[in-house]
Length: 203
Image: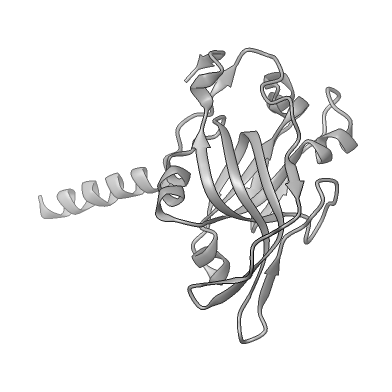
């Protein structure tokens, strides 16, 4: 009886730890029509935990969540527990998302091209972003985000460094690829706007 109880507790823990709800499904249209907005940074460097953070550019966007991955190891996970793969314009359209085979692994974003969108457009209209929560409210919202949600965020693209020489620096382009192409985003405001669209087919 005790063994059965232990097994059930472990099984329940594993289920809640690994379970991910199914992605949201929408009517087939462009949900987010604008590209991310990047501007000059007017914020002095600041300290977060034991790190120095430097704002490289102001940054805001509205986007569809294409994938979400939780990380637990290495110092990056202390700063950014989640990566979000985000899409806008044609990469927010249901048919394009369905045909793209999107995945995340080891802080990278992987996708398979399809005949609905050109490779250059796919790169320009989506990106993997390392989300660094700037406050507890953002941390709470970040945990609730589901694949398929429409989100809006505001903050900064940043460089983070420590006294031992380690650093993590954001890309400043939406068109680069390979190592260093991801954005490191210090997020000060984060919203889930899914239900503003009224086009959900499956939730």
